[in-house]
Amino acid sequence: MPASRRHHRALAVFVHCLGILAAVPALPTVAPEPAAPEATAPRAAAPPATAPRATAAPPGVLRAAAATLTPTPTGTAATPAAPAPPPLVSPSVVVPTRGAASAVTVLVTPAGTPAPGYQVQVRNASSMAVATTVRQELPPGTSATWVTPGGRTSRSATTTEVTWQLRLPARSTTTLHTALTTAAPGRALSAPACAFAAGGDRPYDCATATWDRSPVPAAQATDAPAWRRPAALLAALAGVLLLTAAGLWWWQRRRRARATAGRTGSGGAGNRPAGAGTVYAGTGAGSPGTAPTAAPGQGGPSRPVTPVAVGRRRRPPVWLVVGAAVAVLAGVALAATVTATQRVAAIDTTKQPSSGAWVGTSTTGVVGVPLREQALEFTVYRVACPSTPSIAGRQCQATVGVRNLTPEQQTWHGEMQRAYLPGGTWVSVDEAATRLANQGRDVFGQPLAAGSRLVLPLVFTVDDADRPEQLELRSGVFSAGVRVDVP
Image (tube, rainbow, N blue to C red):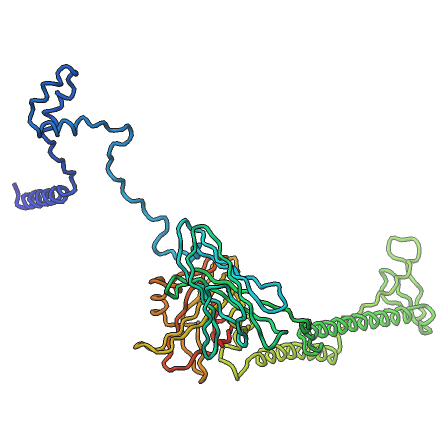
């Protein structure tokens, strides 16, 4: 056998052995059958008459026989576990976040009383009792005159808060009442309330309501002058262009009519100069004193041919073309100037840099008022800052509700959520602390599903003892966002 074929055969044997070794661990292992059940199987199948003889068997055999005689219900035989099905969604697909329904829900309604008041309903939809802490933040400049027994009113330098420690029975609703007094009776007041996990700051649910008994109707917004409205300016420009085009068409038509009338009048018999010849068909131009001749093959004189005037195509004058072009350019420049002026006027240099954003208009409100921007609706229910800073700094926690009102999923980023300090500086969301406050869940990692609502804490870490005076929340980089004044 040639050496080359021996090498090929040795290599094939080696590869075959490797395949056998690789397949051996995948073979199913067969467990040895126990000997005791086999020995007792005939006795188990014996008639009842032979049952007394089985009493002489050793105790171990009896226990094995009893185990063998235990009946097995039909359909309950042990089957090997089926492998786990593959995931329905590819790991590369981002699943939108949809807020899970909370067992504890909150509903706040304004009281129908002349004085400010609120009714807070806390409902437990679960089948077990839940311990919760209900906190209601009162509007600035107000004080509580009466609260449901068990409520504790606490005051700070900037806020007033009422706290209840409740234990909600299964499938029950607890109603709390709050009555307030204020120095400005004609002012609308918003008082949000949240239900937290007992002894913590993790919110179950939040709600808000606005009490308004203002006798003065809301001021009506006045329209801007016509010369400051782009729509009116564009309509006026379109009207000017339309009138110019109509005048140009009318002028061209009159000029053509005059030219046609002049040519017709000059070609008549009364206006022909004396001694002029007559033009006949097929004879060419005539001359004075020349008699008309008949065409070849015809017996009589030919009929005169009516002269056809060949007109030149008229062009509009230069001044009209230049005037129309100047009018169009002036209109375009005016529209661009008005648009740029409005954009520049929207930028407020006394506020933060994002007040002149590209998309939407920035909205400013107070705590407890829903504010909507381009895609999301934000509601700040509570802002709490500890009195003593920790090692990592002073962590201020804002309880925020986010609702996606669009038919599409929306993405928001932690870097775009900011807290502005009195000195003009700002800090973004501390994403590590926010994830810890949300029990390890990354609230910015997945987009918000269409129509979903989340209530979650956002943590802002500040270095000094100043309390944030304003929060800025937005859905995207080019969104104007909303601003919430923090008392």
